[in-house]
Each structure stands twice: as C-alpha cells, then as structure tokens.
Image (cartoon, rainbow, N blue to C red; front, side, top):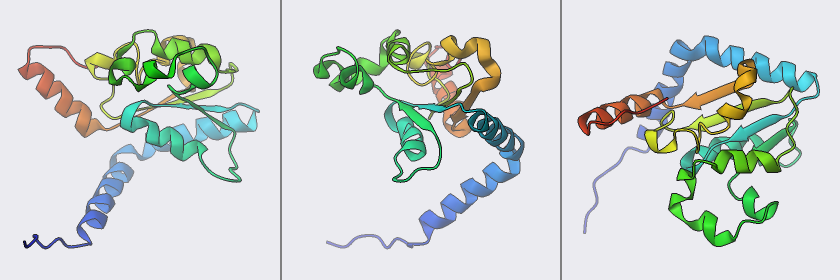
Length: 174
C-alpha cells in the first residue's frame, strides 16, 4: 500500500498563516487582553480559565506548567467530581456539556474574587447548544464585570457554525 506524500512543512506554513492573520487583525484586542490580565495579576487577582471540549486545551495551556509564574485557576468539568458531589459517570456523558446549569455548578466550587479575570475559550464562539452553559457559561455570573472577561474563539469556526445553522433554519451564537 502506498500513501500520499505530505510535505512536513505544510503544517508549519498553515500555523504561520494563522498567527500572521491574528497579528494583523487581532493585535489590538490581544494587547488589551494582555494588559487586563497583567493588571489583574499585579492587583493580586487570579486568571480563571475555562473551556469545554477541545476549547479546554487553552485553559490547560494557562495552568499546566511546572513552576508556573502566573496565578491561574482552571475551571473544569472534572471539578464537579473532584471538589463537588457529582458522580463521575455524569461527566463522562458527552451530553454533560449541554447542561444549562453546568457553568454555575462549576463556579460555585471555585474561589472567585471580584478582581479575577475570566478567560473563556470557545472553538465556535458559543454554538446554540452551548448557549447559557458550556464555553460561554461563566459569562452570566461575571456579566456585571464585563471588563474582566476575555473571550477567545475561532472566528472562522463561528462563521461556519452560523452558516450551517442558517441552512438548517436555526439561530446560532449569542
């Protein structure tokens, strides 16, 4: 059996193109987010990072470092089992992320200070199935502190989700 030849540099070229596009189009918001996070940490606050599914990898990048420099807390679905009274079987259910009360249940277990900054990752920016829970879930509780919420999403994925939803006759986003 033969396999198609893949240039090993193709992934690097794609990654470079994405980073270049972010620098060109999102430099201002990224700088603003960095300044917000730096000021909060200087004030003794914690970065509360959250994402579900694939989006949780951003929260893991913030927190999973030995000798980490930043005061970061990852808000995770697994917290419901580790620090709460949730049966592990519940969070293994792939539909768990669709629970409308999921984010609030996770936040009740966390020590959150009003000075904290929330970094909320969402691959799609909040598909309809996640509205009010999942990735965009922590927003309602921190809504009174809009200046302390940083959202990270894939604009391309969000746009594609809206197109698919429109084709299916549904609303998408928030």
